Length: 580
Image 1 (tube, rainbow, N blue to C red):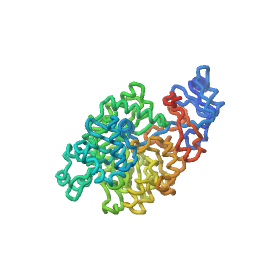
Image 2: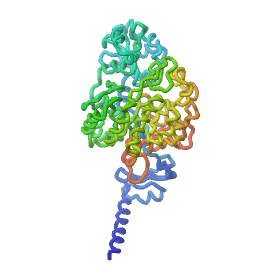
Image 3: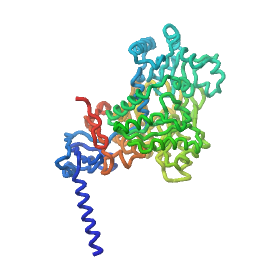
Image 4: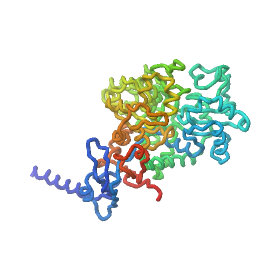
């Protein structure tokens, strides 16, 4: 009798399991299904029940789970994949920028730029209160700061504040009318410590040229008139829609507690630093947040362990918001590599200044902050552009691993320069490489604003995707929208070709598209600490799915870049389809 009871229970459980699996509410079949489950071949079909994956397999296996109420979608041979995941984005701010005057990194001759701004202003797009403010401005303009001044400091602009917001988020330009309003003048520049003085472009007599970077730029953007709450809520809605359109169903918001005018470079958060978090909460409450948002709270690079309590209190106020999680914190290790900013921390000094840029973290104590974050079960996500910043970030993670050998999925984003000595350390320390490989191109930024100023050795290791991949690093896809497009298909194709208008940026560092498919799915899910819920098509995971208009495994790189999403599903419900 004792042996018979378990047998009866097993039979009952099996019957119960079969009963549960007979209730699929959605079938997608006759397709080419990329599961993102390593080692698993392509499947044909997927069954969904109650917003979760019920079964992945052959058409016959999946169709057996249908009943009279099951919705059936014949994929007609099209590719089905998990929703794309972006491991470093600022989507709400990006969407807000797109709602006004935005150059989107386009470089125009200065006379054409003036006429374009006049037209934008007359059309009612360019103003924040009485300030003419233009977003998405290329760093290529900053070499022409004095020439910009000759246009925008006289005539119709003499008393009109004008601000050009750099697309990189670290730089910008303001005319004399704006500088005067903010009391940024020669006396101020002269009074500053050398480090801060260098963030304000100036002549020999300390007169500002209009160009500003990092803390200098924060002096301007923090004083720009802010948008209304309703405008920002519309921006949040647009951010979700744009991502869903590209098949993105999850992202890491890399500065969720920072507002549109906050200093990002050295933000000192408070318990009231909510940033875009209330917007996500409102969307979630209204059923409009059709994406997983892993919100990182930005903190000062030299924060002490005790300072993390402030961030914990912010997180507590948003606990339980659907589709909103708090995996950890974001820290700037350095700034940007491009001239004239050159605030990235580099090993070999910049050729023009003979300086090593700005390392924002304190190497002697950064490891202690990592340990403190791990004690709270938080990850640390680093902004590290220069090879010295990458090295010191890894050193901090290594310090933590010596105290606790169990890897924590910390991540480093950008990785524009990485010294080869660091390649194996990513795998050894379990650190994820969050890469914006749309930037791996030979164009103005890499060839004209970087190459002349850094060592030839460092230059050949810009965005070293293949080297990191070969060394066993986990590569995760990212956009850094609005710095570049949130379209993952552009980035996946670019990772393979590395072609740009000025040639190819080190073809030896190209990486194949299938590896990039994993980078934007299961690998990215690991960076968000959501790999148990999303990132691959496996029973029990949420049914975040995308249907594509072409066979992304076979088309050319050009055709891959132009991939269109035909349907996006979030938790089994369609949240995007192109207008017919």
